[in-house]
Image 1: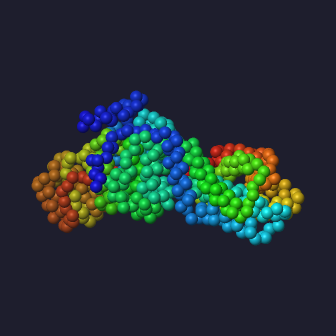
Image 2: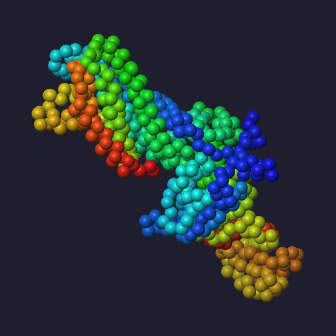
Image 3: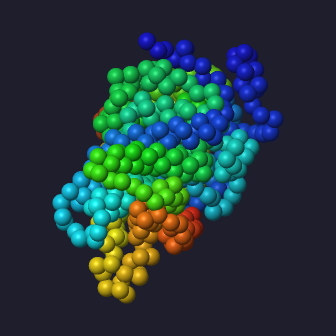
Amino acid sequence: MTTIATLDLTPRPGAAPLHRMVLAQAGAEIRAMLRNGEQLLLTMIIPILLLVGFSTAPLVDVGGGARVDFVAPGILALAVMSTAFTGQAIATGFERRYGVLKRLGATPLSRTGLLLAKTVAVVAVEVLQVVVIVAVALALGWSPHGDPLWGVPLLLLGTAAFSGLGLLMAGTLRAEATLAGANLVYLVLLGLGGVLFPLDRFPAGVQHVLGLLPISALTSGLRTALSTGGFPGGALLVLLCWTVAALALAARTFRWE
Amino acid sequence: MPGVDSTFESTLGSAGDAAPAVEIDGLVKRYGGTTAVDGLTLTCARGAVTAILGPNGAGKTSTIEICEGFRRPDGGTVRVLGLDPADPALKPRLGIMPQTGGVPPAARAGEWLRVVSRFYAHPLDPDSLLGLLGLTDHTRTPYRRLSGGQQQRLSLAAAVIGRPELVFLDEPTAGLDPQARHACWDLVAALRAAGVSVVLTTHQMDEAEKLSDHVVVIDHGRVVAEGTPESLTGAERQLRFRARPGLDLEELLAALPPGSAAKESPSGHYIIEGQVGPQLLATVTAWCATEGVTTEDLRIERRTLEDVFLELTGRELR
C-alpha cells in the first residue's frame, strides 16, 4: 500500500537527456501504431494482400517478366506511403484534436524531440513492413537484381516526403477532414501512381504529370533499383523536391492545437 | 520544516531564486472582440498554495494557460519563477494538469505515465504514484475507458511525476467522487509540505478554504478580492435569516447597537452584522414580531468564502 509519506515530493526538477525522451516517445508511438487495428490494416494487411493477389493472379498486364518482380517494388512504395503519410497524418491529426500535442508541449520534450520521435517510430514500423513484404515476395518467387542498395536512399527520401505531406495535412485540417483526406489520397495515389497499374497504360500527356507524383517517383525509382539496375536519379530528384516543399510548408503552417 | 526548506533551496538554480512562483502585472488577453483578462495583477508566493476562484468565464483558465506558456498575453507582463512563460528552461520545473484531455485515448494509463516520467531526470516512481491515487487496478486500461474521475487522477499524477517546483492545477477535483477528492487534497497538502508551490483554480469553496494559503477571487478578468481564507471571510459572526423580500431595514438598524449593519443580499436573504450576541438576537426577533415577519433559517455563523464570493460577484459558482 502506497502512502503519501513514501513519496518524496521535494522539488528536484530536470529534463531527461534528449535521446531518452525521444526513445520513450518513439516507443509509445510504435506501440500505438501496432495496436491500432485500422492502422495495421492499412500498413500491413492491405499491402500483403495486394502483393499476393497481384503477383499470383493475372489481374494486370505488367509486360514481360515475373509478375512479382513488377509488383514487389510497388508494394514497398505503398508501405512507405501508408505509414509515413496516411497513418501519420491521421494519428497526428487526432493527437492535435485531443490536446495530446499541447499536453506534450508542457513537458521537457521539445517539438524537435517530438518530430524526431515520430521519425524514429515511422522508420521502425517501415523496417518491419519491409522485412515482412520482402519475405512474402521472396516466397512468391521474387528475384531482386539491379542495385538494391539504391533502395535505401529512395525509401528514406520517400519517407521524408510523405511525412512532410502527412504533417502538412494534419497540422492544418480538422482531424475528421484529415482522416477522410488521407484515406482518399492513399486510394488515388494507389490507383494513379504506378503501384500496381503501369503508368504507360495512361495517355502520354497524363503519364508525364503522374510521373511527378511522389508515389510514382518512389515506385519507378524502386523498380529501377531492384529490377533493371542503375542510378534512379530522376526519382531521387522528384522526391527531394517534394520533401523540401512539403516540410517547408508544414513547418510554416502547422498548428499545434 | 527547516529540513525541507534547505532541500528546496539547494535544488534551485542561481537565477530567480527570490522570484515569486507567479507574478502577473496588468495582464490582458482578448479573443476577437471579447476581453477575457482585463488588467489582472496578482502574485503567487513560493511554497504556498494559491487558489484562483471565479465564475465560469471569469478568465481563470486563460490566466493559467498564459502562465503555462500555452497562450501569449496581449498586454501586461507575466513571470513564472522569474522567467518568461515561453522560456523552455521552465518546462522541467513546472507540473501542469490541464482541465481536460491531453492523453491519447488508446494509451494505457500505466504506460502513458511511464512515458511521461521518462521525460524527467528524477521522476517519481509511476507505480507508486498510481497506487497513491487509487489507479493500480487500471494501469492496463486505455485512457478512454477510464471514468472521468480516473482520467483526472491520471492527469494529476502526470503533473507531479517530474518533481516540479511549481504545479498548475486547473480544476483538479472537478468530477471526482468524495474519496478521490480527498486523495487529491492530501496530495496537494503533501506538495505544499514538501515546498512545492501550487496554483489551482476551483469551483469549490470548501476546497479553496481547506487547501490554500492565499485566495484570489477574479471576475470579468480582474482581481476583485484576495487574501488568506480567514481574512476574506472575516472573524466576526453574522446573523442570517430568510423572510419575504423587501423588508424595510431602517427601523431595525435604528434599534441595533451602533456599528451594526443590515442588508438584504440576495433578495429575501437578510444578513445582520455587528456585535452578534443575545442582545442583537433579541432586538432582531422583537423587530420581526412587530413587523409580523416569520423568519426561516435563522442562524448565527461565520461568513463562508461562498458568501464572500456571492457578494463580490453577485453570482453562484456554477
